[in-house]
Length: 302
Image (tube, rainbow, N blue to C red):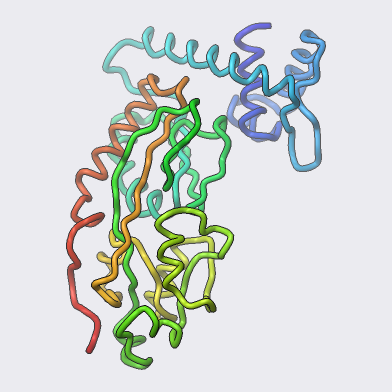
């Protein structure tokens, strides 16, 4: 077994398909398959179960995963050291985060990182609030509940406010909203029920009517529907406060959410991972007024 063998093994374990692993490694997919088969023969154990939907790790594959990650990290660290301090970063950093954080906070700030490190690849995976990706699928993850795994280094990233928003035209053409109970007479835009295991979303959900007319797993869909006058949507303040089409509904109602940053322990010291970690800390520091500041802009019509 060699470090190169483990590199092919890790690529398939992370991507789940030969074609995706081959694209990451810059080789043909038949080469990847041949190298993995050769490794299995050398070990005398099957590392993957082959299926139509992808390659899944066997029990032996899972046992090999941890040591393979350590070897890959050691090789990456050596490459960084030999490259010298102050050099442009290379390689890839995979980030998993909620779609709101990724689209409205992180993505707009990636320009400076790319200019400083043009050879660095940032893989941004946005998901619903319930991020269910396994540990081998990310370097950094932004999640909305305290990470419990011992395989990650965790830190509090920032809190943020959720409020109710709608357009003035929608509010003026529908019954007045004086309390949360009045929401039963309105079109409410919200998450699909099975995605609501994340605080404070579950607490907010308890105040919403039992019948949610528009449901989506995508926060951008909530925002666009509300901004088009479809109904009332709970939205992070850092999204809605910058949209002049929206005004807060029941301004006294606010819900405080939290973003946690989780870093895979074996990758936390890599320079490229630390660079993205610092970028995230700079983003939330610069956007604190958007995240947790007072309501700005016009209030809803009386």
